[in-house]
Length: 136
Image (tube, rainbow, N blue to C red; front, side, top):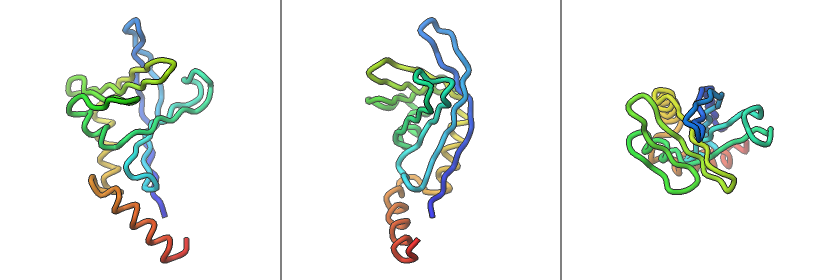
């Protein structure tokens, strides 16, 4: 059986004119995909009016809270001690969001209660083994 954690949170979209717009988001983690975290945005804040989910490595989020991290489509960097920026890069542009660091740390701490850092593959193998053993 897989465990899924969800934590509603708020973020601030930083515009090109340095304005910030408050938007809702949900942080999600599931033991079915242990190395990954997901940030889900509701349809009313996306360009296409659909729920949008960005998925990236949990370790990237953890590292990015201490120092700039990421080279690809998702980058995370601290902004002082109380905020962190998460940048989403796509072919249509870049979105920069500011999150409260405390929210992100709380979320990570919760994910570590499901599967400890560095044990992501052990957890997946255990889940697979239990499914085979119990046929669920």
